[in-house]
Length: 412
Image (cartoon, rainbow, N blue to C red):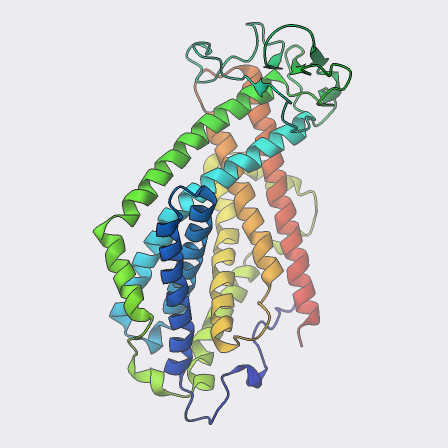
């Protein structure tokens, strides 16, 4: 299969004007000034959001995006810039982006895993009318297991009610005993649903088994703790002198760009070589991927490696993560060369984002399964969840293989 031609051939996309007037430094300065402005605006919005959680999250996402773009351009076009300045700022922006990304990663990972648990157990995630899911009653934890008790002691049901009395029903777990569900391997469970005056209209058609409920509570406790620590680390970073130094450097970048001696060359020539190098690295990394194996929708061989030791799973995921990073660098370089063009392989980047999210979610499920002295039903649910996320990994690889093959076919 021929590698797709990822470069843009539209010469009109390069800034218009006499060939000797538009230099590489001018093109880089225009792009980096714009990204530095986005960085500073996002920082202002973050500081003004206050208690607005959604506003803070949106500003932090925009701050990470601007940081990644500036860092990526400093990496790709380093020969045209002051190398010492570019290396220092790129390192600091990478630190900032990674620090701010942790909280969002924990939040999205928890949501992904809980949604998968609900899907695998056959439950419809509708909130009760007046009750709440009680999976962790105060003072009622399984001794030494690190997980809450969800039933009356025999693991037969999960309470979802606002108290005892009429209108409380127990939905049996028979619907989740089918193949592929999270039915407990030892005994039957159920979901007690409080109808609060509407006993003839049940709120759920499925059931969340004891194993899945306990697995969800364990994951929520672990990832919420990780998210809290990431939030504290982000706040500490944003208040540190290191961050203020980064913000000062970006503020200077918004109006002034330290350039190297080669930046005076025409943009069409000086920018092409670093961009082609970024493209070649991407093509080489994709060529090293097992795309032939990924062409099979149900890849049993890769799933066996994914269900093996943690190091084996990380080893097979690492090349795909590297392709994701190189694709991002290539896209940023094309944004400098052709600012008006459509994003390069945008769908492929989204597929690799999904691949990364599924791989990290599977790792989180495996890490939760290593909790000492958890119940067999909980370990079973976590194992099914891990396998489900590894299937998502393989689905993303299959989708990327399809996107890449179509790109190769349509390339001139």
